[in-house]
Image (cartoon, rainbow, N blue to C red):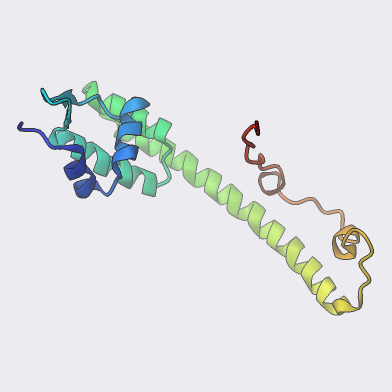
Length: 155
């Protein structure tokens, strides 16, 4: 067999085999050919694409965005214009998030400072008095409104 086995691809890319199989399942990677034994047989192009995925993730691209970029590349189009547009959008979102976090930091620091001055002499009967007495300034929506993790059904 001339192709690479999944273990070799994993070594070369740093992605564990289950992740590689997942990327195939969701269509990020093309399905590899199979040897007569049933083993997956990967090309060096798959290694290149996985290394590209790793770098794109490090730059903040989502798997959907990476799939879009790979699709453009595979169809013979030049994806760099789209990558640049996505990157500008990411940067704007990050800068907005930083501003929100700085605002939240000021709010939280002011509350902690107030609590430190009160010390442990505060009597907490029931709910924590620190939180109950906090200023009504709301935190940024992304911090407060994060969805809770889903619970598995217990049978």
